[in-house]
Length: 337
Length: 275
Image 1 (tube, each protein chain N blue to C red):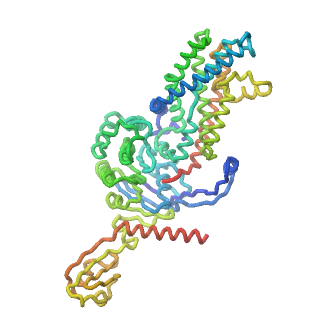
Image 2 (image 1 turned 90 degrees about the vertical axis):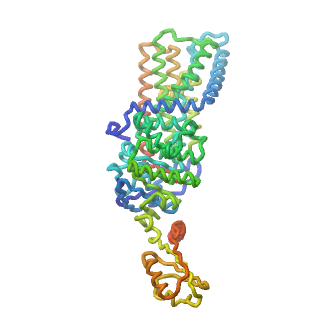
Image 3 (image 1 turned 60 degrees about the vertical axis):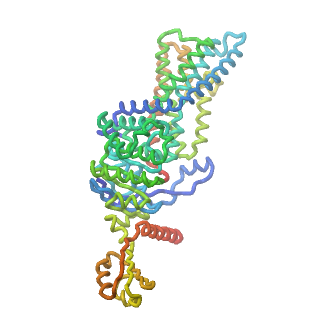
Protein backbone atom coordinates (compact mmCIF):
# COMPACT_ATOMS: atom_id res chain seq x y z
CA UNK A 1 0.00 0.00 0.00
CA UNK A 2 2.76 2.42 1.00
CA UNK A 3 6.25 1.94 -0.39
CA UNK A 4 8.84 4.48 0.71
CA UNK A 5 12.47 3.96 -0.19
CA UNK A 6 15.11 6.30 1.15
CA UNK A 7 12.44 8.97 1.22
CA UNK A 8 13.92 12.37 2.03
CA UNK A 9 12.88 15.97 2.23
CA UNK A 10 15.12 18.91 2.85
CA UNK A 11 14.17 22.49 3.53
CA UNK A 12 16.13 25.60 2.95
CA UNK A 13 16.02 27.84 5.94
CA UNK A 14 17.39 31.29 6.36
CA UNK A 15 16.92 34.15 8.70
CA UNK A 16 14.48 36.60 7.23
CA UNK A 17 15.39 40.17 6.54
CA UNK A 18 13.10 42.81 7.98
CA UNK A 19 10.62 45.00 6.09
CA UNK A 20 8.98 44.81 2.69
CA UNK A 21 12.26 45.48 0.92
CA UNK A 22 13.93 42.72 2.90
CA UNK A 23 11.12 40.37 1.97
CA UNK A 24 11.54 41.19 -1.69
CA UNK A 25 15.28 40.65 -1.47
CA UNK A 26 14.76 37.34 0.37
CA UNK A 27 12.71 36.18 -2.56
CA UNK A 28 15.71 36.36 -4.82
CA UNK A 29 18.26 35.17 -2.33
CA UNK A 30 19.95 31.91 -3.17
CA UNK A 31 21.58 29.55 -0.76
CA UNK A 32 20.46 29.41 2.81
CA UNK A 33 20.96 26.51 5.11
CA UNK A 34 19.84 23.09 3.98
CA UNK A 35 18.09 21.08 6.67
CA UNK A 36 17.01 17.49 6.26
CA UNK A 37 13.61 17.02 7.88
CA UNK A 38 13.24 13.49 6.56
CA UNK A 39 16.43 11.60 5.97
CA UNK A 40 16.15 8.32 4.10
CA UNK A 41 13.00 6.76 5.47
CA UNK A 42 12.22 3.21 4.38
CA UNK A 43 8.69 2.20 5.12
CA UNK A 44 6.45 -0.52 3.76
CA UNK A 45 2.89 -0.74 4.86
CA UNK A 46 0.70 -3.60 3.65
CA UNK A 47 -3.03 -3.36 3.03
CA UNK A 48 -5.07 -3.82 6.20
CA UNK A 49 -2.36 -2.78 8.66
CA UNK A 50 -2.86 -0.24 11.43
CA UNK A 51 0.47 1.46 11.98
CA UNK A 52 1.34 3.93 14.71
CA UNK A 53 3.82 6.59 13.67
CA UNK A 54 5.52 8.25 16.61
CA UNK A 55 8.43 10.51 17.36
CA UNK A 56 9.24 13.67 19.33
CA UNK A 57 8.20 17.09 18.08
CA UNK A 58 10.21 18.02 15.02
CA UNK A 59 11.17 14.42 14.26
CA UNK A 60 9.81 14.54 10.70
CA UNK A 61 6.46 12.79 11.21
CA UNK A 62 4.29 15.51 9.75
CA UNK A 63 6.66 16.12 6.86
CA UNK A 64 6.49 12.41 6.02
CA UNK A 65 2.69 12.40 6.23
CA UNK A 66 2.53 15.49 4.01
CA UNK A 67 4.63 13.77 1.38
CA UNK A 68 2.44 10.69 1.56
CA UNK A 69 -0.72 12.75 1.18
CA UNK A 70 0.68 14.56 -1.86
CA UNK A 71 0.99 18.01 -0.30
CA UNK A 72 4.77 18.13 -0.18
CA UNK A 73 7.19 17.15 -2.88
CA UNK A 74 9.93 14.74 -1.73
CA UNK A 75 13.46 15.94 -2.47
CA UNK A 76 14.97 12.46 -2.50
CA UNK A 77 14.18 8.76 -2.65
CA UNK A 78 11.01 7.22 -3.99
CA UNK A 79 7.50 7.08 -2.69
CA UNK A 80 4.55 5.14 -4.04
CA UNK A 81 1.17 4.98 -2.42
CA UNK A 82 -1.39 2.69 -4.01
CA UNK A 83 0.97 2.59 -6.96
CA UNK A 84 0.88 6.37 -7.49
CA UNK A 85 3.36 9.13 -6.83
CA UNK A 86 1.44 11.29 -4.38
CA UNK A 87 2.74 14.74 -5.35
CA UNK A 88 2.78 14.17 -9.10
CA UNK A 89 -0.47 12.24 -9.30
CA UNK A 90 -2.10 14.27 -6.56
CA UNK A 91 -5.57 14.49 -8.03
CA UNK A 92 -5.87 10.76 -8.60
CA UNK A 93 -4.05 9.91 -5.41
CA UNK A 94 -6.40 11.82 -3.12
CA UNK A 95 -9.34 9.70 -4.22
CA UNK A 96 -7.67 6.70 -2.54
CA UNK A 97 -6.85 8.34 0.75
CA UNK A 98 -8.68 9.90 3.65
CA UNK A 99 -6.81 12.38 5.80
CA UNK A 100 -7.44 13.95 9.18
CA UNK A 101 -5.11 16.66 10.39
CA UNK A 102 -5.87 17.01 14.07
CA UNK A 103 -4.87 20.65 14.12
CA UNK A 104 -6.73 21.87 11.06
CA UNK A 105 -10.24 21.12 10.02
CA UNK A 106 -11.21 20.08 6.53
CA UNK A 107 -14.75 21.27 7.04
CA UNK A 108 -15.80 24.78 6.14
CA UNK A 109 -15.94 26.95 9.21
CA UNK A 110 -19.08 28.82 8.20
CA UNK A 111 -21.11 25.96 6.80
CA UNK A 112 -23.24 23.44 8.64
CA UNK A 113 -21.67 20.02 9.01
CA UNK A 114 -24.16 18.41 6.66
CA UNK A 115 -23.51 21.03 3.97
CA UNK A 116 -19.82 20.19 4.13
CA UNK A 117 -20.56 16.47 3.93
CA UNK A 118 -22.88 16.95 0.95
CA UNK A 119 -20.27 19.01 -0.81
CA UNK A 120 -17.54 16.44 -0.19
CA UNK A 121 -19.80 13.67 -1.44
CA UNK A 122 -20.38 15.71 -4.61
CA UNK A 123 -16.69 16.46 -5.05
CA UNK A 124 -15.78 12.79 -4.69
CA UNK A 125 -18.80 11.76 -6.78
CA UNK A 126 -20.21 9.40 -4.17
CA UNK A 127 -23.65 8.18 -5.20
CA UNK A 128 -26.65 9.05 -3.08
CA UNK A 129 -27.27 5.59 -1.57
CA UNK A 130 -23.67 4.87 -0.68
CA UNK A 131 -23.38 8.30 0.87
CA UNK A 132 -26.49 7.83 3.00
CA UNK A 133 -25.36 4.38 4.11
CA UNK A 134 -21.93 5.62 5.13
CA UNK A 135 -23.37 8.53 7.04
CA UNK A 136 -25.55 6.16 9.02
CA UNK A 137 -22.60 3.91 9.82
CA UNK A 138 -20.45 6.83 10.95
CA UNK A 139 -23.29 8.06 13.10
CA UNK A 140 -23.64 4.70 14.83
CA UNK A 141 -20.07 4.85 16.16
CA UNK A 142 -19.22 8.54 16.20
CA UNK A 143 -22.66 9.85 17.16
CA UNK A 144 -22.65 12.73 14.69
CA UNK A 145 -26.32 12.99 13.78
CA UNK A 146 -27.17 15.64 16.40
CA UNK A 147 -24.31 17.79 15.05
CA UNK A 148 -25.24 17.74 11.37
CA UNK A 149 -27.10 21.03 11.26
CA UNK A 150 -24.71 23.04 13.38
CA UNK A 151 -22.18 25.38 11.83
CA UNK A 152 -18.68 23.97 12.20
CA UNK A 153 -17.44 27.01 14.10
CA UNK A 154 -19.89 26.27 16.92
CA UNK A 155 -18.69 22.71 17.51
CA UNK A 156 -16.49 21.74 20.44
CA UNK A 157 -13.12 20.24 19.58
CA UNK A 158 -14.33 16.70 20.25
CA UNK A 159 -17.44 17.18 18.16
CA UNK A 160 -15.46 18.72 15.35
CA UNK A 161 -12.93 15.91 15.35
CA UNK A 162 -15.66 13.28 15.10
CA UNK A 163 -17.12 15.14 12.12
CA UNK A 164 -13.70 15.57 10.58
CA UNK A 165 -13.04 11.83 10.75
CA UNK A 166 -16.39 11.09 9.15
CA UNK A 167 -15.60 13.66 6.43
CA UNK A 168 -12.29 11.96 5.69
CA UNK A 169 -14.07 8.66 5.00
CA UNK A 170 -17.07 9.84 2.98
CA UNK A 171 -15.51 8.62 -0.26
CA UNK A 172 -14.59 5.23 1.24
CA UNK A 173 -10.81 5.42 0.82
CA UNK A 174 -8.79 2.22 1.37
CA UNK A 175 -6.08 4.19 3.18
CA UNK A 176 -6.56 6.56 6.09
CA UNK A 177 -4.00 9.00 7.47
CA UNK A 178 -4.66 10.33 10.93
CA UNK A 179 -2.27 13.08 11.95
CA UNK A 180 -2.68 13.59 15.70
CA UNK A 181 -6.43 12.99 15.71
CA UNK A 182 -6.72 12.80 19.49
CA UNK A 183 -4.81 15.96 20.33
CA UNK A 184 -6.56 17.83 23.11
CA UNK A 185 -9.49 15.42 23.36
CA UNK A 186 -11.06 13.99 26.48
CA UNK A 187 -10.87 10.31 27.38
CA UNK A 188 -14.36 9.44 26.16
CA UNK A 189 -13.86 10.97 22.71
CA UNK A 190 -10.44 9.36 22.42
CA UNK A 191 -11.95 5.98 23.12
CA UNK A 192 -14.66 6.57 20.57
CA UNK A 193 -12.12 7.45 17.95
CA UNK A 194 -9.98 4.41 18.72
CA UNK A 195 -13.03 2.18 18.49
CA UNK A 196 -13.87 3.74 15.17
CA UNK A 197 -10.38 3.13 13.82
CA UNK A 198 -10.68 -0.52 14.83
CA UNK A 199 -14.07 -0.78 13.22
CA UNK A 200 -13.15 0.62 9.80
CA UNK A 201 -10.03 -1.48 9.82
CA UNK A 202 -11.91 -4.65 10.65
CA UNK A 203 -15.00 -4.17 8.53
CA UNK A 204 -13.64 -2.35 5.49
CA UNK A 205 -10.06 -3.55 5.70
CA UNK A 206 -8.98 0.11 5.71
CA UNK A 207 -5.25 0.61 6.16
CA UNK A 208 -4.51 3.20 8.82
CA UNK A 209 -1.43 5.28 9.50
CA UNK A 210 -1.76 7.13 12.78
CA UNK A 211 0.60 9.74 14.18
CA UNK A 212 0.16 10.71 17.77
CA UNK A 213 1.87 11.82 20.93
CA UNK A 214 -0.51 9.75 22.98
CA UNK A 215 1.03 6.33 23.32
CA UNK A 216 -2.12 4.86 24.74
CA UNK A 217 -3.61 5.50 21.26
CA UNK A 218 -0.85 3.39 19.78
CA UNK A 219 -1.19 0.63 22.35
CA UNK A 220 -4.94 0.51 21.92
CA UNK A 221 -5.19 0.73 18.15
CA UNK A 222 -1.93 -0.24 16.44
CA UNK A 223 -0.37 -3.66 16.09
CA UNK A 224 2.72 -2.10 14.58
CA UNK A 225 4.62 1.02 15.49
CA UNK A 226 7.25 3.08 13.69
CA UNK A 227 9.39 5.46 15.69
CA UNK A 228 11.28 8.20 13.91
CA UNK A 229 13.65 10.85 15.11
CA UNK A 230 15.91 13.25 13.22
CA UNK A 231 14.10 12.13 10.09
CA UNK A 232 15.19 8.50 10.43
CA UNK A 233 13.37 5.34 11.38
CA UNK A 234 14.70 4.15 14.72
CA UNK A 235 12.23 1.39 15.38
CA UNK A 236 9.78 -0.50 13.21
CA UNK A 237 8.06 -3.52 14.65
CA UNK A 238 5.23 -4.92 16.73
CA UNK A 239 3.96 -2.46 19.34
CA UNK A 240 4.81 -4.63 22.39
CA UNK A 241 8.42 -4.92 21.23
CA UNK A 242 8.93 -1.14 21.29
CA UNK A 243 9.43 -1.00 25.03
CA UNK A 244 12.08 -3.69 24.96
CA UNK A 245 13.82 -2.07 22.06
CA UNK A 246 14.03 1.24 23.92
CA UNK A 247 15.48 -0.49 26.98
CA UNK A 248 12.30 -0.66 28.98
CA UNK A 249 12.66 -2.91 32.01
CA UNK A 250 10.01 -4.99 33.67
CA UNK A 251 9.81 -4.79 37.41
CA UNK A 252 9.45 -7.78 39.76
CA UNK A 253 8.64 -7.18 43.40
CA UNK A 254 9.38 -10.17 45.66
CA UNK A 255 8.41 -10.39 49.32
CA UNK A 256 10.54 -12.98 51.07
CA UNK A 257 9.28 -15.08 53.96
CA UNK A 258 12.45 -14.39 56.00
CA UNK A 259 14.27 -11.07 56.05
CA UNK A 260 17.67 -12.76 56.53
CA UNK A 261 17.35 -14.31 53.04
CA UNK A 262 17.39 -10.84 51.47
CA UNK A 263 21.07 -10.69 50.52
CA UNK A 264 22.94 -9.93 47.29
CA UNK A 265 23.76 -13.64 47.04
CA UNK A 266 20.13 -14.27 46.21
CA UNK A 267 20.41 -12.54 42.81
CA UNK A 268 23.98 -13.50 42.02
CA UNK A 269 24.51 -14.32 38.37
CA UNK A 270 21.17 -12.93 37.25
CA UNK A 271 21.00 -10.12 34.63
CA UNK A 272 18.99 -7.80 36.85
CA UNK A 273 19.19 -4.47 38.61
CA UNK A 274 18.18 -5.03 42.20
CA UNK A 275 17.27 -3.24 45.38
CA UNK A 276 16.63 -4.61 48.87
CA UNK A 277 14.39 -3.02 51.47
CA UNK A 278 13.81 -5.22 54.50
CA UNK A 279 12.29 -8.45 53.29
CA UNK A 280 11.31 -6.85 49.96
CA UNK A 281 13.40 -7.41 46.88
CA UNK A 282 12.80 -5.30 43.76
CA UNK A 283 14.26 -6.51 40.49
CA UNK A 284 14.36 -4.72 37.13
CA UNK A 285 15.16 -6.76 34.07
CA UNK A 286 14.86 -6.79 30.32
CA UNK A 287 12.49 -9.20 28.68
CA UNK A 288 15.02 -10.15 26.03
CA UNK A 289 17.71 -11.01 28.61
CA UNK A 290 15.78 -13.15 31.06
CA UNK A 291 12.23 -14.37 31.42
CA UNK A 292 10.11 -13.88 34.49
CA UNK A 293 9.77 -17.68 34.67
CA UNK A 294 13.53 -18.21 34.95
CA UNK A 295 13.80 -15.57 37.66
CA UNK A 296 10.98 -17.08 39.69
CA UNK A 297 12.57 -20.53 39.34
CA UNK A 298 15.96 -19.35 40.60
CA UNK A 299 14.56 -17.24 43.43
CA UNK A 300 12.22 -19.92 44.78
CA UNK A 301 15.12 -22.41 44.74
CA UNK A 302 17.32 -20.04 46.73
CA UNK A 303 14.81 -18.75 49.28
CA UNK A 304 11.23 -19.05 50.45
CA UNK A 305 9.05 -16.55 48.56
CA UNK A 306 5.94 -15.22 50.32
CA UNK A 307 4.53 -13.03 47.51
CA UNK A 308 5.50 -11.83 44.07
CA UNK A 309 4.29 -9.51 41.31
CA UNK A 310 5.54 -8.55 37.85
CA UNK A 311 4.86 -5.19 36.19
CA UNK A 312 5.33 -4.33 32.54
CA UNK A 313 7.32 -1.17 31.84
CA UNK A 314 5.11 1.82 31.24
CA UNK A 315 5.32 2.78 27.56
CA UNK A 316 4.88 6.47 28.36
CA UNK A 317 7.86 6.34 30.69
CA UNK A 318 10.06 4.49 28.28
CA UNK A 319 9.28 6.73 25.35
CA UNK A 320 9.49 9.90 27.43
CA UNK A 321 12.97 8.89 28.51
CA UNK A 322 13.88 8.23 24.91
CA UNK A 323 12.56 11.62 23.78
CA UNK A 324 14.53 13.40 26.50
CA UNK A 325 17.65 11.65 25.32
CA UNK A 326 16.83 12.60 21.75
CA UNK A 327 16.49 16.23 22.81
CA UNK A 328 19.84 16.12 24.54
CA UNK A 329 21.41 14.54 21.46
CA UNK A 330 19.96 17.26 19.25
CA UNK A 331 21.26 20.04 21.50
CA UNK A 332 24.69 18.41 21.57
CA UNK A 333 24.67 18.19 17.77
CA UNK A 334 23.74 21.88 17.50
CA UNK A 335 26.50 22.91 19.88
CA UNK A 336 29.03 20.85 18.02
CA UNK A 337 28.27 22.78 14.82
CA UNK B 1 -2.17 20.13 -11.95
CA UNK B 2 -1.18 19.44 -15.51
CA UNK B 3 -2.95 17.03 -17.87
CA UNK B 4 -6.46 17.66 -16.62
CA UNK B 5 -7.81 14.94 -18.88
CA UNK B 6 -6.02 12.18 -16.99
CA UNK B 7 -8.31 9.40 -15.80
CA UNK B 8 -9.52 9.90 -12.25
CA UNK B 9 -9.28 13.65 -12.35
CA UNK B 10 -12.41 15.45 -11.38
CA UNK B 11 -14.42 16.46 -14.49
CA UNK B 12 -14.50 20.23 -14.97
CA UNK B 13 -18.31 20.13 -14.79
CA UNK B 14 -18.16 18.77 -11.24
CA UNK B 15 -15.49 21.32 -10.29
CA UNK B 16 -17.75 24.03 -11.70
CA UNK B 17 -20.89 22.81 -9.97
CA UNK B 18 -19.34 22.21 -6.55
CA UNK B 19 -17.30 25.40 -6.75
CA UNK B 20 -20.30 27.58 -7.56
CA UNK B 21 -22.33 25.89 -4.86
CA UNK B 22 -19.67 26.46 -2.21
CA UNK B 23 -19.25 30.10 -3.22
CA UNK B 24 -22.99 30.59 -2.95
CA UNK B 25 -23.24 28.89 0.44
CA UNK B 26 -20.40 30.94 1.85
CA UNK B 27 -22.05 34.23 0.80
CA UNK B 28 -25.33 33.13 2.32
CA UNK B 29 -23.55 32.21 5.54
CA UNK B 30 -22.64 35.90 5.75
CA UNK B 31 -25.92 37.51 4.75
CA UNK B 32 -25.27 40.47 7.02
CA UNK B 33 -22.15 41.34 5.08
CA UNK B 34 -24.17 41.47 1.87
CA UNK B 35 -26.41 44.06 3.50
CA UNK B 36 -23.40 46.09 4.59
CA UNK B 37 -22.09 46.00 1.01
CA UNK B 38 -25.45 47.11 -0.29
CA UNK B 39 -25.47 50.13 1.99
CA UNK B 40 -21.85 51.15 1.47
CA UNK B 41 -22.02 50.76 -2.32
CA UNK B 42 -25.22 52.83 -2.30
CA UNK B 43 -23.46 55.61 -0.45
CA UNK B 44 -20.51 55.75 -2.86
CA UNK B 45 -22.78 55.56 -5.92
CA UNK B 46 -24.90 58.37 -4.54
CA UNK B 47 -21.83 60.44 -3.78
CA UNK B 48 -20.46 60.07 -7.31
CA UNK B 49 -23.86 60.83 -8.77
CA UNK B 50 -24.18 64.01 -6.68
CA UNK B 51 -20.69 65.13 -7.61
CA UNK B 52 -21.28 64.81 -11.33
CA UNK B 53 -24.75 66.27 -11.14
CA UNK B 54 -23.17 69.35 -9.54
CA UNK B 55 -20.42 69.53 -12.15
CA UNK B 56 -22.99 69.48 -14.94
CA UNK B 57 -24.99 72.41 -13.50
CA UNK B 58 -25.72 74.65 -16.48
CA UNK B 59 -23.66 72.55 -18.89
CA UNK B 60 -24.69 70.17 -21.64
CA UNK B 61 -21.46 68.38 -22.16
CA UNK B 62 -18.31 67.70 -20.17
CA UNK B 63 -15.44 65.85 -21.83
CA UNK B 64 -17.71 64.54 -24.55
CA UNK B 65 -20.37 63.06 -22.31
CA UNK B 66 -23.84 64.28 -21.51
CA UNK B 67 -24.98 64.58 -17.89
CA UNK B 68 -27.19 61.50 -18.24
CA UNK B 69 -24.41 59.44 -19.74
CA UNK B 70 -21.86 60.50 -17.14
CA UNK B 71 -24.06 59.89 -14.10
CA UNK B 72 -25.10 56.54 -15.54
CA UNK B 73 -21.46 55.67 -16.09
CA UNK B 74 -20.28 56.49 -12.57
CA UNK B 75 -23.18 54.73 -10.89
CA UNK B 76 -22.96 51.59 -13.05
CA UNK B 77 -19.16 51.49 -12.83
CA UNK B 78 -19.36 51.50 -9.06
CA UNK B 79 -22.38 49.23 -8.66
CA UNK B 80 -20.72 46.42 -10.62
CA UNK B 81 -17.75 46.37 -8.24
CA UNK B 82 -20.07 44.49 -5.88
CA UNK B 83 -20.23 41.77 -8.53
CA UNK B 84 -16.63 41.43 -9.65
CA UNK B 85 -14.92 42.54 -6.43
CA UNK B 86 -13.32 39.41 -5.04
CA UNK B 87 -11.44 38.54 -1.91
CA UNK B 88 -9.81 35.46 -3.35
CA UNK B 89 -6.40 37.06 -2.77
CA UNK B 90 -6.94 37.23 0.98
CA UNK B 91 -8.54 33.81 1.06
CA UNK B 92 -5.69 32.18 -0.81
CA UNK B 93 -2.85 33.81 1.09
CA UNK B 94 -4.69 33.00 4.32
CA UNK B 95 -4.96 29.32 3.36
CA UNK B 96 -1.24 29.26 2.67
CA UNK B 97 -0.37 31.13 5.83
CA UNK B 98 -2.41 28.91 8.10
CA UNK B 99 -1.29 25.73 6.39
CA UNK B 100 -4.85 25.00 5.31
CA UNK B 101 -3.63 24.66 1.75
CA UNK B 102 -2.72 21.11 2.87
CA UNK B 103 -6.44 20.47 3.27
CA UNK B 104 -7.37 22.09 -0.05
CA UNK B 105 -4.96 19.79 -1.82
CA UNK B 106 -6.77 16.71 -0.48
CA UNK B 107 -9.53 17.20 -3.02
CA UNK B 108 -9.34 15.81 -6.54
CA UNK B 109 -10.07 19.21 -8.02
CA UNK B 110 -7.91 21.63 -9.93
CA UNK B 111 -7.41 24.19 -7.18
CA UNK B 112 -7.20 27.17 -9.51
CA UNK B 113 -10.34 26.23 -11.43
CA UNK B 114 -12.14 25.43 -8.19
CA UNK B 115 -11.45 28.92 -6.87
CA UNK B 116 -12.53 30.53 -10.11
CA UNK B 117 -15.90 28.82 -9.99
CA UNK B 118 -16.19 29.39 -6.29
CA UNK B 119 -15.74 33.10 -6.84
CA UNK B 120 -18.18 32.96 -9.73
CA UNK B 121 -20.72 31.41 -7.33
CA UNK B 122 -19.94 34.22 -4.91
CA UNK B 123 -20.39 36.81 -7.66
CA UNK B 124 -23.63 35.25 -8.89
CA UNK B 125 -25.10 35.33 -5.41
CA UNK B 126 -23.89 38.88 -4.88
CA UNK B 127 -25.56 39.80 -8.17
CA UNK B 128 -28.91 38.65 -6.86
CA UNK B 129 -28.74 40.06 -3.36
CA UNK B 130 -26.56 43.14 -3.81
CA UNK B 131 -25.87 44.23 -7.39
CA UNK B 132 -29.39 43.93 -8.82
CA UNK B 133 -31.04 45.66 -5.83
CA UNK B 134 -28.48 48.45 -6.28
CA UNK B 135 -29.33 48.68 -9.96
CA UNK B 136 -33.02 48.78 -9.13
CA UNK B 137 -32.97 51.65 -6.69
CA UNK B 138 -30.29 53.75 -8.37
CA UNK B 139 -31.93 53.28 -11.77
CA UNK B 140 -35.30 54.36 -10.45
CA UNK B 141 -34.34 57.20 -8.14
CA UNK B 142 -31.32 58.73 -9.88
CA UNK B 143 -32.90 58.74 -13.35
CA UNK B 144 -30.13 56.76 -14.97
CA UNK B 145 -30.25 56.24 -18.66
CA UNK B 146 -31.32 52.73 -19.59
CA UNK B 147 -29.75 51.22 -22.73
CA UNK B 148 -31.69 52.07 -25.86
CA UNK B 149 -30.99 48.83 -27.69
CA UNK B 150 -32.04 45.43 -26.37
CA UNK B 151 -28.73 43.81 -27.39
CA UNK B 152 -26.82 46.06 -25.03
CA UNK B 153 -28.05 43.92 -22.14
CA UNK B 154 -26.58 40.57 -23.24
CA UNK B 155 -23.35 42.24 -24.38
CA UNK B 156 -23.15 44.01 -21.02
CA UNK B 157 -23.69 40.61 -19.34
CA UNK B 158 -20.82 39.03 -21.24
CA UNK B 159 -18.61 42.01 -20.47
CA UNK B 160 -19.46 41.68 -16.77
CA UNK B 161 -18.50 38.01 -16.79
CA UNK B 162 -15.16 38.91 -18.36
CA UNK B 163 -14.71 41.78 -15.89
CA UNK B 164 -15.10 39.21 -13.15
CA UNK B 165 -12.56 36.88 -14.78
CA UNK B 166 -10.01 39.72 -14.97
CA UNK B 167 -10.67 40.73 -11.39
CA UNK B 168 -10.30 37.12 -10.27
CA UNK B 169 -7.13 36.61 -12.28
CA UNK B 170 -5.49 39.70 -10.83
CA UNK B 171 -6.57 38.93 -7.26
CA UNK B 172 -5.29 35.37 -7.63
CA UNK B 173 -1.83 36.63 -8.55
CA UNK B 174 -1.92 39.05 -5.62
CA UNK B 175 -2.84 36.09 -3.37
CA UNK B 176 0.07 33.96 -4.56
CA UNK B 177 2.44 36.93 -4.29
CA UNK B 178 1.22 37.71 -0.76
CA UNK B 179 2.13 34.23 0.27
CA UNK B 180 5.51 34.23 -1.37
CA UNK B 181 6.42 37.71 -0.17
CA UNK B 182 4.82 37.06 3.21
CA UNK B 183 3.20 40.46 3.08
CA UNK B 184 -0.53 40.05 2.65
CA UNK B 185 -1.61 43.35 4.21
CA UNK B 186 0.64 45.54 2.06
CA UNK B 187 -0.33 43.88 -1.18
CA UNK B 188 -4.05 43.90 -0.32
CA UNK B 189 -3.77 47.64 0.11
CA UNK B 190 -1.88 48.00 -3.14
CA UNK B 191 -4.48 45.93 -4.96
CA UNK B 192 -7.35 48.07 -3.65
CA UNK B 193 -5.57 51.24 -4.72
CA UNK B 194 -4.66 49.95 -8.16
CA UNK B 195 -8.17 48.76 -8.87
CA UNK B 196 -9.74 51.92 -7.47
CA UNK B 197 -7.65 54.17 -9.68
CA UNK B 198 -7.12 52.09 -12.82
CA UNK B 199 -10.33 50.11 -13.27
CA UNK B 200 -12.49 53.10 -14.12
CA UNK B 201 -14.80 52.38 -11.20
CA UNK B 202 -14.70 56.04 -10.13
CA UNK B 203 -14.32 57.96 -13.40
CA UNK B 204 -14.18 57.03 -17.09
CA UNK B 205 -10.54 56.35 -17.91
CA UNK B 206 -10.57 58.65 -20.95
CA UNK B 207 -10.72 61.50 -18.47
CA UNK B 208 -7.09 60.88 -17.58
CA UNK B 209 -4.77 63.52 -19.05
CA UNK B 210 -2.46 63.12 -22.03
CA UNK B 211 0.34 60.67 -21.34
CA UNK B 212 -1.55 58.66 -18.75
CA UNK B 213 -4.56 57.86 -20.88
CA UNK B 214 -2.96 55.38 -23.32
CA UNK B 215 -1.12 53.68 -20.46
CA UNK B 216 -4.20 53.28 -18.32
CA UNK B 217 -6.21 52.01 -21.26
CA UNK B 218 -3.53 49.47 -22.13
CA UNK B 219 -3.62 47.85 -18.69
CA UNK B 220 -5.94 44.93 -17.85
CA UNK B 221 -7.73 46.85 -15.09
CA UNK B 222 -9.74 48.91 -17.57
CA UNK B 223 -11.64 45.71 -18.35
CA UNK B 224 -13.20 45.69 -14.89
CA UNK B 225 -15.40 48.80 -14.78
CA UNK B 226 -14.45 51.03 -17.72
CA UNK B 227 -15.43 48.56 -20.47
CA UNK B 228 -18.72 47.25 -19.04
CA UNK B 229 -19.86 50.76 -18.04
CA UNK B 230 -19.06 52.10 -21.50
CA UNK B 231 -20.99 49.24 -23.04
CA UNK B 232 -23.93 49.95 -20.75
CA UNK B 233 -23.95 53.63 -21.70
CA UNK B 234 -23.67 52.61 -25.35
CA UNK B 235 -20.55 54.65 -25.91
CA UNK B 236 -19.31 51.99 -28.27
CA UNK B 237 -21.22 51.40 -31.54
CA UNK B 238 -22.56 47.89 -31.75
CA UNK B 239 -20.47 46.92 -34.81
CA UNK B 240 -17.31 47.78 -32.84
CA UNK B 241 -18.26 46.29 -29.53
CA UNK B 242 -16.35 43.08 -30.19
CA UNK B 243 -13.10 45.03 -29.82
CA UNK B 244 -13.29 45.87 -26.11
CA UNK B 245 -14.80 42.44 -25.46
CA UNK B 246 -11.86 40.85 -27.27
CA UNK B 247 -9.42 42.87 -25.17
CA UNK B 248 -11.20 41.79 -22.01
CA UNK B 249 -11.13 38.17 -23.10
CA UNK B 250 -7.44 38.32 -23.97
CA UNK B 251 -6.57 39.75 -20.56
CA UNK B 252 -8.77 37.22 -18.78
CA UNK B 253 -7.08 34.33 -20.56
CA UNK B 254 -3.58 35.74 -20.04
CA UNK B 255 -4.15 36.25 -16.33
CA UNK B 256 -5.62 32.78 -16.08
CA UNK B 257 -2.56 31.16 -17.63
CA UNK B 258 -0.12 33.18 -15.55
CA UNK B 259 -2.20 32.39 -12.44
CA UNK B 260 -1.90 28.64 -13.03
CA UNK B 261 1.84 28.88 -13.42
CA UNK B 262 2.17 31.03 -10.32
CA UNK B 263 0.21 28.51 -8.29
CA UNK B 264 2.29 25.62 -9.54
CA UNK B 265 5.45 27.45 -8.54
CA UNK B 266 4.03 28.26 -5.12
CA UNK B 267 3.02 24.66 -4.51
CA UNK B 268 6.46 23.40 -5.39
CA UNK B 269 7.98 25.82 -2.94
CA UNK B 270 5.37 25.39 -0.28
CA UNK B 271 6.34 24.63 3.25
CA UNK B 272 3.24 23.81 5.19
CA UNK B 273 3.90 25.20 8.58
CA UNK B 274 3.23 23.53 11.88
CA UNK B 275 1.67 20.27 13.07
